[in-house]
Image 1 (tube, rainbow, N blue to C red):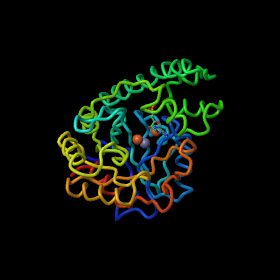
Image 2: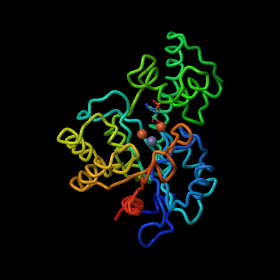
Image 3: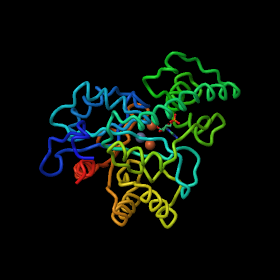
Image 4: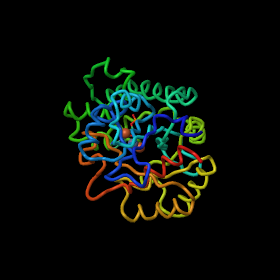
Length: 306
Ligand code: AMP
Ligand code: FE
Ligand code: FE
Ligand code: ZN
């Protein structure tokens, strides 16, 4: 590893934690967020954020675009990704296990090949979801070119947006609940990379792997959850997203304890998606949500290695 191998991770804050809120979980239009990478940087600056990480689903295109647009020198920045993995055997669930990767090299070919396979699987699934919806009597009008756009990661949130715009549902949430959620009648499964492989690729690319929003997993706090964390740590997991707007204060405390006991870094972010998640503000989530600023420096140190 070594810091030279991750030239894009940057921190103006050599001494002590950053001043101002931080957000280590942000989506852009490169996946299912509604702000472009350049607009994410603008918003982060306007909100006075001291450090951010862009973590799009299965792509680092948003990180590249942000770096090209120019990260303000006063803002800490970590390249990130949120990989759609198949869950570990200790966590039986439908759908994806989200794995965050921080500080990955953007030119790591095995990682990039994996991300491309995941992008293809999402893209190839869209027409099948639309066909299911047609069987249910919903004929969505869409811009074929936009649906096949290989720059962005068009996925279920975009389809949810169309269902809402075209009057079939009143909210994104209702689109998932009634139609395209993991238990909905128009749900179609897709390829996912085994989580052990995803952790291995993140590490090979010089990054740190962290379990995203554990509070949304179907495991209650207790032995089953901890068995899963042990399995993941064995695979090379080094962090857990303790701080996330979906976590109650009690859960946050529990995850904090788990991180300590398992020797894992505590990460956190708002999972900002822009307008598709109304009410979740960059760096601030909802209410008095905040990510402890030390999380950024801890992660940066871990990425840089000893
Ligand atoms: P996809 O990767 O195309 O399967 O879409 C998954 C994404 O849809 C997730 O990462 C979330 O951003 C979003 N999503 C999943 N379930 C819901 C839900 N119930 N309400 C709103 N957004 C959701
Ligand atoms: Fe998302
Ligand atoms: Fe996620
Ligand atoms: Zn996310």
